[in-house]
Length: 123
Image (cartoon, rainbow, N blue to C red; front, side, top):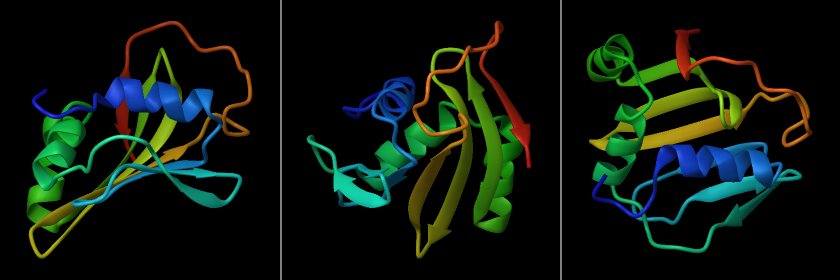
């Protein structure tokens, strides 16, 4: 990836920090929601291209097509390393926004991770 962020690293951080949500919006640094409060992450601003690369790194072909056709895509993503997440991608005036909601029970609470590969599923 040409940007400074990798999706798997961001998902691990969300889980480790017990964040409820990660928000990626063009022209802003990533935002994590912790205990109901939005917290700006240290690091650079993300571009629409960065967000697109992050989305494509976890989305299936069908989910990419849904985003192109409908302007949004919603699905569940399970990572062996990080947990389970609801992914919401939306486009508005050519700008891609990505919202990642932590579904690992109580966000960040310790839980056993299932064995297996990273998986995605449609909502």
